[in-house]
Image 1 (cartoon, rainbow, N blue to C red):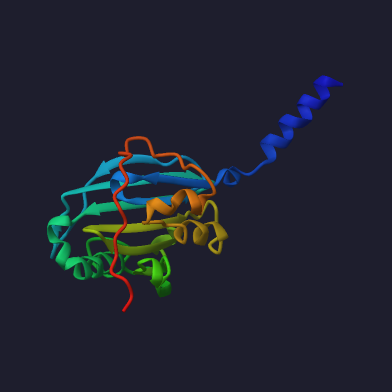
Image 2: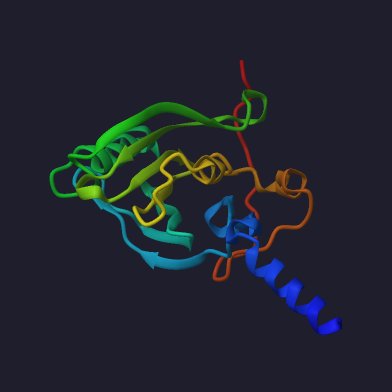
Length: 211
């Protein structure tokens, strides 16, 4: 009987979808946290744009589960922070229109303003774009923000092998971005694991009060 019970338990565990492991992960050194369905891996990359040039540094934080790719890209433009609005607009252009980059010739199926935190807690505004990728590449949903000298691209790619282009996991991920890490334990309901490779020193979250 004990062997049968163990076998049944094993079957139950294997039947639990991988997405059941959703939780917040944080990266204090890049000033963000997000929900992921699995522990994301940090990779150093680079991000360069024709007008605003090469970022001082860039990191990708990626997890892939059930043929859905979840990624946060953070590019440091702190030496050009005053150009933040223009940097974000160029990043959106590169994503949607540029001939040599991004998803040109894809079909935009959503384009809306988005916001992190209410106004009274220092709202950060951005742009979220959903696009069916060219050549049957799947669906991409990306939210763009610029805060404290850094460009954030918070994206999901639902691959054709998954095929559920209206998956609620896309919104769950893209809507989960947090900048005010001092509030994160309250938001997450407890301590949050730090992404391997990230620093742990939390930068104070400052903002101009609403007038």
